[in-house]
Length: 375
Image 1 (cartoon, rainbow, N blue to C red):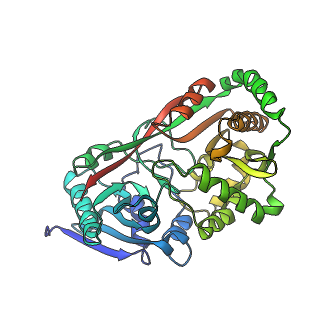
Image 2 (image 1 turned 120 degrees about the horizontal axis):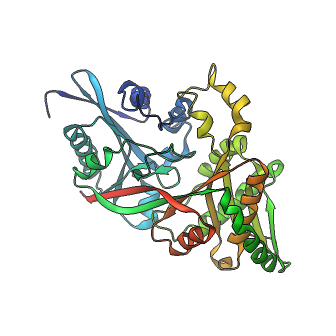
């Protein structure tokens, strides 16, 4: 162990210094595109008594000091549900933050690799914060604009730091951007949608907030089927869905949350959210005492949304439900004064969805990368 490095290693129960590292390190001090995470939400994320992920996972946090100053952090993550579902022994790293030093980054990745290897893992993969059901990926292209809501962000030099640790690309994730010109595609979408909806067994409706418990069960059924063949997918537990629902119901806009049913059975789900990062950026991590006023007074000024999830149950795919989701989301967004949109994230090898994005006139403007290496 290097004499100038001091490691603070702790379980997820002691996370305060770890959470505050992006501020105390000064890494983002002069970065105009950084959106500080909400500290109150991060505290929930790392609290095993609150966040359901910890019920089926092991998380170890590493905070590295050099000359009494915090210089880097990383989390070692063993997601037992992932390994069971994929029949793997993969350990993950996440929440990586580091000063611009290869010595520090290599030491951090060395720490997390040693921890995971001792736990019996044979592959290191990440960044995952904590899994594909939360935020994941390292931004490797598209540093000129802030991230959309619930998408990660990092300095460009992180690419070189992680690759210097022997990590190589496992998969890229794309974020697509669209502006009001996407409205030119609406007549074509309308024609297709009319044909799809001529089948009276198909119904697409807004989510019923007043009956949210029943709606969540339908969404869970759709999610765990529609995404089951996707790379990196991990089925969500009842506890995870219930936790997510409790949070989402506070920020969801029913006009942007759509459920498709065929013969009364759940067939597809689409969710877009206003880009709350336009507000969160002003809060500097804290809703209280004054950040809450930004939410109250600035919410109506949000002019961008993120379509963050859209899926169709396998047996109902290729029946045009996706076209209806895109059409209604775009139209409802326009009605609310939205002039920009992000579709994210999409796997680089999801040929069908990438083609649809191009057809809609959206362009890839950010790329996020998942890395891995053998342990």
